[in-house]
Length: 443
Image 1 (spheres, helix red, strand yellow):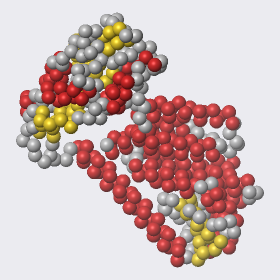
Image 2 (cartoon, helix red, strand yellow; image 1 turned 90 degrees about the vertical axis):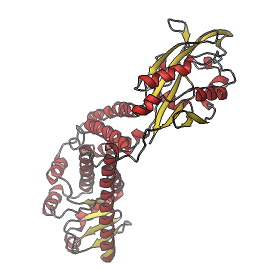
Image 3 (cartoon, helix red, strand yellow; image 1 turned 120 degrees about the vertical axis):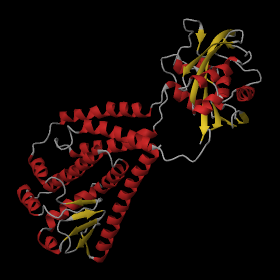
Image 4 (cartoon, helix red, strand yellow; image 1 turned 180 degrees about the vertical axis):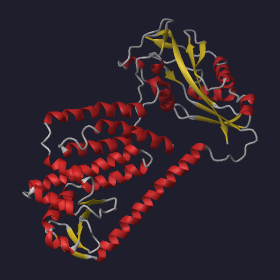
């Protein structure tokens, strides 16, 4: 879901920016600050797409074998076209603002490029194009264009060219494109805009430092910046000479170099980033196994099951063929009741997986009362295949949120015939299984 992605991405960026604040704008290792800011933005964009499944966790629940997931569909009572939900409205607003921002950025860039195309062009001798235009009050660079007024070219070209060439050489424009992506995706997140501001400032700190290293007098350069501190470019992909807080830039140029030991503070972002990605991307043990175990078998019906579109569970078949005892990450030991979470040879339903799917599909009924009340959800039923193949200890491991639906799921599992028991080292054992049954009303 789009809104879910945007919120998760915003949370990740906010947490990471909180770790960067002590570094951004305070210490003088600008390259490191820049790399950390870029890493934070890329991590925030990617975190919601990461899937981490802890299939071998320490709890019994995380190691229980999953059966094929089933979805039971039923027509909602008096189904009519539904009005927009709050989620739909939020998504519409979110996408509208994001689209408007993209349109504004594209329009600004296009109009500026057209103006630059009609202006006077010169070469700076380093592969960049100098664009001279009377409309430019404050010099800036855009991709490989360095834009300034004819007056600045004649009187201040050394300062301007050195500064803007550094922006181009350091590929700051790539960061600006990333900033545009992040602020578009997270336009509602103030921390995205704060990080964008700080990264732009870091660009200026880097360029200013490079200018001073080129032998330009720092005092004269700072006086020049003060004189030019008007008319900043509003183009999102442009590095303006006087963009950002001029006071902070001058303070940074005169600041004593930060101790390299302070770089160790940056290491904090590594565990924070890892924990953030894990928290946002990790699925719960039950949900992760449910989604990864099989493809859902879909049951089409109005008030009862009519047609099955089930496919064999590749995951379950593979598990049956490959002895689980070979996997040493978790010891396969019985619980206090002598029940195993796995076995060398898994229990088998009479006739195999296809027969199991057919049996459940033909047995499960969407409760009419649940249809009338609009109840839907997913019941995760746990049960034990005993040594003699009988079904025992049937219980709800995760409720669908409706007792009626949970009871129907329990009824179906309890009605199953005897299985061939699972074995460990050739001896029958009690093995625990889970089966998820999804009840869903068609809109």
